[in-house]
Length: 385
Ligand code: SAH
Image (cartoon, rainbow, N blue to C red; front, top):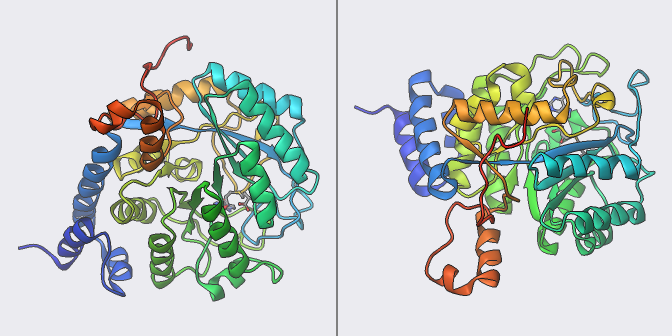
């Protein structure tokens, strides 16, 4: 005899959705035993599209200056205790060069909304990275800008953009953000990015203050509608110098459940096991992979600035060198039966496009599988440590 939730899980795996209210019902009542079924279904789907591959993203936290005042974030402008820094172009390019040596083929430039990084500066940077490393993808995660700016970045060679909606519910959005920010503009940005042709990532914090399961269901339905190529989710973790200092963090279990549900709703999605998940539990990222995640984002920022990019308290890996993080990540993936793949790691729909252009006969013969846009896959461990 299967339980109501087990039936919901099978229906979700089959239909990629559930009737109104049932996503919230599932997530709010799931037992440990039922969660195992959810993870098993999620892994099946993940392995159908991506095999055992895990894609690497090199995260470069290039500025901690921010004009915004999001209530949850340690980098908010009213946090006078935050240490501010900004990497120079030379430093950012050096991070990419080092990252390339360490097998990274995607660089994620993330930062606060720093007015010093004008459209011209960002375009210049993207062009230089693409020219030095033509076989690498550049992902931007620099917040809300006008559509024209996104168009310029895309022309300069940025192909992916991460912009979490944080919450799709307008009331909840207003609890997490100052009045000058709106969910309407956030969604406008995501829609523009999609239309321009980026591989787009949205996402939320799990267990953020005032979040309810009904709001999470709204988020899931927003994702089903947007069809993002990537979804970034991690637990909310309080930062001591923010108004949310005394709220509790999101839980490991809730985050794992949600990763698995997202995998079933968006089977081909690129889904990172985030640093925040690794921060609330020492094996959080490994468990994230076992719940359906297929991306990890080790830190490539220079060691001396890592502790200054504090979105939340307790962030891991702030004292490590990039090479250590890289090796550590390969070990962590291997410990749960997955393997880091050296390639750009595009969304499967884009891999099809790329391989059709390069090798039409191969694609026509159904020759693309879980190769991640990297026909000549090298395995790992080479030249490290
Ligand atoms: N300025 C960029 C990048 C923000 S940092 C932008 O607006 O998109 C990237 C993500 O970190 C945010 O989208 C948010 O979801 C997450 N984050 C911020 N503060 C956090 C906290 N206290 N706990 C967990 N995640 C947090």
